[in-house]
Image: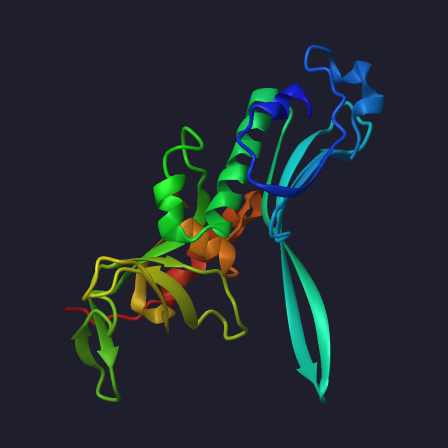
Length: 256
């Protein structure tokens, strides 16, 4: 095991492949033969999560390290009486760097995420919270607030907030999940009768103050990554920045 990885507090794994031969003290252009595509691959004990370190473009000293976290989901579908098995690989995390210290930080973030995603949340808080990285990793998320008054029924009667959330409640909004033009959306927020976050589907027109935000909340991060939400990838930021340009036109509220 390379020294760079040896002192990391790895999750229990079923496979560990280490092809790291890079000299941290030597320039990259003096060791191009060591800049291979697959440098490290670690799969957790369940086989669902894999941390992978690659160099791209391969053998190119002007390239860089790329850190990924993949999730494997196995499905069984019955079609006309025949059971078909399928496997879907999702890319939950992707960051790149040429700096060794930053590389270590990214790998530690992936370890944090595997523990967060693969452990019961209550048990995770007891065992891992605040003990794995100096600062929890964040994801870019689309965030908004519930309108003060919505228009209800044919008579456009003003009603405060929505059925589940009070007016002004902050909601963490999922990316588009179905083809309705982002009219019905999945969100995470605190309901009227509880301090615990829940996930529900509401109308996008009842959300205002749309914005891009870095989210560190471990529950939100876990829920997003585990349920088709925003991923820890740079392209998520660009998508959200574009969405907040046109989403304000979607908001509908009573002028009270």
